[in-house]
Length: 326
Ligand SMILES: Cc1cc2nc3c(=O)[nH]c(=O)nc-3n(C[C@H](O)[C@H](O)[C@H](O)COP(=O)(O)O)c2cc1C
Image (cartoon, rainbow, N blue to C red; front, side, top):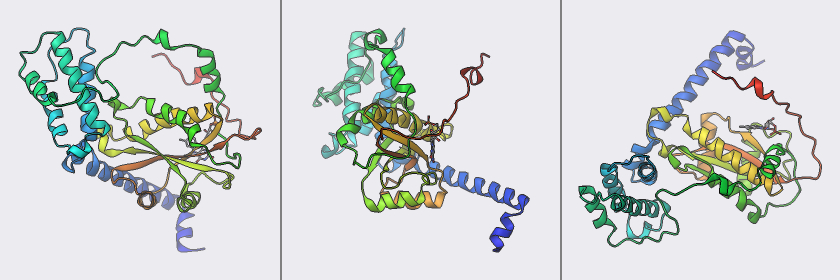
């Protein structure tokens, strides 16, 4: 027995070791958060999430029951970020969204006759040579849920029939069949609509081999048929310490919608926890070429459903076990 094994066989030493490890891993996460959160991103010239945060705030101001002139500092801050975009980057989503939100804001001020506000004029000057037609429209809109809910029953059946599967047809996933899942992914609600998550479909054999090797929960899968998607989140989107757990939470919501979208198109999947230690996480991120501020949320194993699968029953608690009125 090696010294390491001997130490590990001692319950107390194992417990202390685990606690030291937990502390170390959380500290690394804290350091990463401080190094990459939204204000640090701005220092590095990355305004994407600052723009999204400002746009969200301006849009919400248009939905208040008793609106007052608002957002006077925010529009100026937004213009500051937009002005920093070079001509070549003005097709980017965040730039276009910022401009569209400013048009909506001026429309809103005009509707309420608030043109005398100083900031209004600054925005008009900025928008003078800008194009209203971004292909989408920011601002506020009327939403009538009754108009969109056609057949709740179909939705219920689809939603409740998904199960994790770990073997798949020996067939490459057609990108056309992923489009609906991607739509589900982008339609997922995220905190302040910051949309900080991304999906990578891994086709590179070297990276597939790496994931086969490092993903902790993959034993038991048919490695010949599993294809991987990787879901990430971006630390550059978070504003302050209270948001330290936002990344995984938002990635979780996006992943759920994504795998339901795959399911609707006949693609089975299984989430694979990314519980890897910090060092390995860094290694894989580097291999994937992720942004410095981007973090892995989860890996999804997927492929077309086999006609029949043997799966764990994964028995659920009763609804009343998880529900309490306080
Ligand atoms: C965040 C998350 C991580 C998971 N990690 C693994 C994993 O590493 N290996 C695995 O075989 N299954 C994994 N699963 C699948 C769960 O075991 C499965 O979803 C659960 O048992 C419920 O079964 P169902 O998906 O068939 O309804 C994971 C699921 C989630 C949501």
